Image (spheres, rainbow, N blue to C red):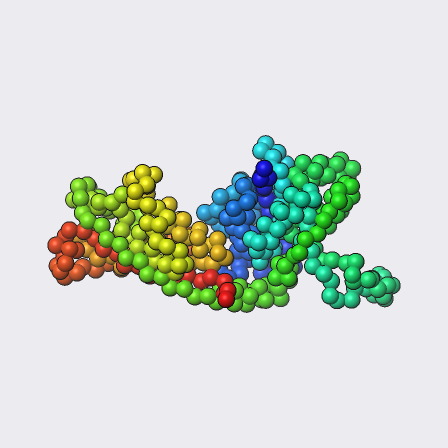
Length: 391
């Protein structure tokens, strides 16, 4: 039987060593808060069923902005230590306890979906597993005065990362026992698990799964984020819908009064349909009909918002982002210029991008063709998408 999996994202620390006047998890790299990468990774991972963010009470507003559009459990407030914060996240899961829990630091924004999958697989086999890297530098211990006291054998050493994966009941019990005994000094959950008598296995970590701590880390992360999205894709979409009976049209997610409606299996939002095809085209991922068949009764009269949401999720699931959406609508009526800003704002909200990245234009066809005869509306869209570079 496939184990159920939940993730605890630890983001309650102050993290001010990195500078910027904000806790590091809410500073921006690549145009979005660091924490969003970790939240989105877990929220969109097919094997993770629930995600619990653990935050500081002072960060509620910043968190709400960073988590916009993601399917998460309500955030819980952390404690005075990382250990107390993890325990709070674990306790939040006890009403629907998972088989496996992943504990991940929000300050590791470059963790991959494959690493998460490996963590789940390793834990299912062993009950406790952590990602680790071989140590390549010589490691020495020093005294309080800065003098070397010994050199360690590298073969027996590993540097560890998150997400760390554990049997949920076992980790929750270990945290509760440690709290009862006043032990709040464990540096990570693996150390606590070792103290509790659990055997912790290692699996291959990722060199790129770095933790952001200092301002220099931010500079490197910003350069890396830009470089990682070097695969620039452009897709085009075209859609048309005929007029039919009705008292309004849906365009760009906005209800616009009109003496006729648009005919279509869903809500016939020709603008959003064109945008969806443009995004899917940039991904080389079929078209709207391939994912939402017009013959499927589930989509009869459905709001097209969900189609655009789906397309955006397809981009993010591949580690990418929508850079720009450009939409042109062709019709003689209704008049659209007064609705342009509302359409831009609605499209941006559905696609989860800044409104400055959405362009909406409207024109007539000078009374030529089916649009000129007022038989229907046409829409043409271009989507610019950035993806991680792969050969």
